[in-house]
Figure 1: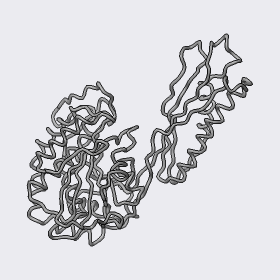
Figure 2: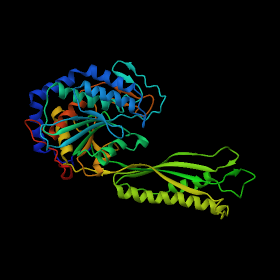
Figure 3: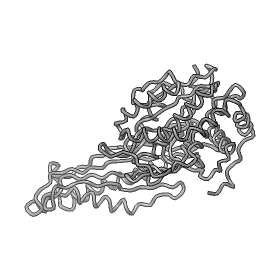
Figure 4: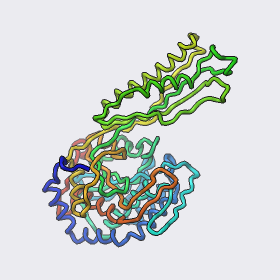
Length: 428
């Protein structure tokens, strides 16, 4: 990764992290995290073996509530959409409120065998890395801070969020910022395991399901009198394939799934496709979205015209359904969350190896201009989103250490002021 054009870490951030890392209680917490790696990986395995498909996270959520209580946090609840929210109260009621969250859901459907198999330092199991590593890191951060008696000026929400994956559409994060009523001033999402990665950008995505419906009929008897839903989708898909997307900012599209038809000798009465559109900026994504929607409308119109079908009862019709809406956003390099996280990396001797963008729970606050990023849990996840996923338990202490130091810089300690500003509209 090229880093020569990335602005340096500010002196304020460096000095704050140096001071924080030298506090006796923080040194105690850092050491505790380092010494608890055996217990921490057992926790990660335990969580992995609790199934949590998107939209069905409730059993895992219940266990995380129990674990937060065991860590010493008293104010823990499940909010209106299913997020686990544990409140760490700061000493300053006017201080900032930081959320630290890892998503609880996995991409795997109900019935998937989530039993974990260990081979040395390697652990095999669907979801063992994404995102049980993140949940482990958040809980270990909380446990260490409580055990060491750390005090903060601002307050922290320790969270397990729902619906980050796939069609979950970051619904837990959206709820936090749109409907919870909590005056959150910043977010540290915890996802992935590469502690050298810090995100300054959020890749937005719009996802659409296009369904073509018609009367259908026999492949021979109705030929020429009935248009085909599958043919219309194929015509539209060919138009989409020739579309050009901007390279800067990178904007992409794909028809991800196609479903339809009854049998080989039936003119299809229904066919649907799911389309994914992504970009780092909303404007090119919306422009491409308009072209794609036009292509599917044109495909239906063309198939009706090919067969001369003018009777509305016999024509194909298009049904559009938006099934995903993840907003895009970028944070400036002097954003306090980025500065605090980079300074915490430097304090721990972690090189910045991936300063980029992805699609995470941080998308929502980034799109709103709220200080936010995504940090990682430590270790190394591989074959993510497959049933062959595995996790190498190497240097797993670095994740919670990085999260803790970043958070303390943002909310402030007895010896430092908060780097995270309180947003105007969230003042009480």
